[in-house]
Image (cartoon, rainbow, N blue to C red; front, side, top):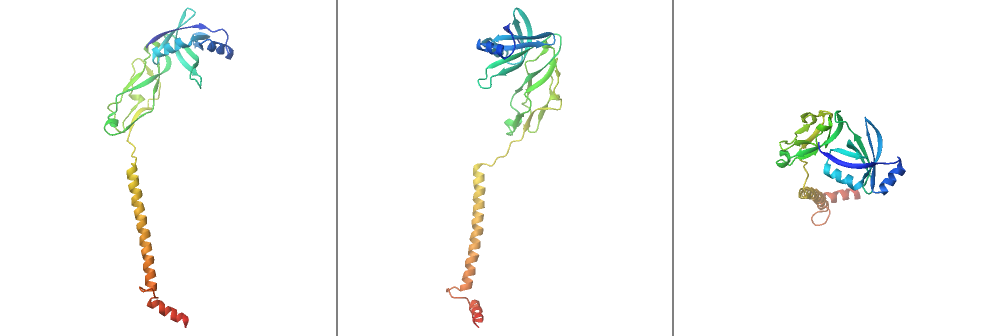
Length: 240
């Protein structure tokens, strides 16, 4: 597990007023807490904190120097401004190197699945972090999963994972990643062809109906425009 150096100062007072003053001074208000220490308000230089997080690149143990005393801590929570995304508060969890701790580590997927490359499948990532418990010295930066051999319909579950010196806390039945079959989508050309066929069919039906109507009219009147023979007889009977 990577260890990163960071320093800060005790923060006088607590509450919104103290935190606001720290931010105005270019500092990030925070608190250090843990099972073996009392909660301690601190202030960390904003630039130094950003540089430390960049160096860590993920899960890391921070050697937090506060007034000459070094505490081994994990970053448990980071609060950000909803508008600027600037860090406005940090929670540090002081740890003991001899006691197991619970935390989440990121999952990294290696390679491109065979089902995606050759069959056009879709790789669906269900989990991106894994809950574990271990001693601080055994904390892995991440867990790697090689997905190159996965075909359509195949998946990886938590029960398939092996992380040395670590107890996996996530449910063993949970799916981590699955390769789904490709979704069939009609192209615009196919849809236009279907619409064209439907239109031609409708026109054919309408034309047939019109033809039948015309034939009926001709039969009723006769080819020369005069009433047909049957029609004359009917009219004579009506006249009588």
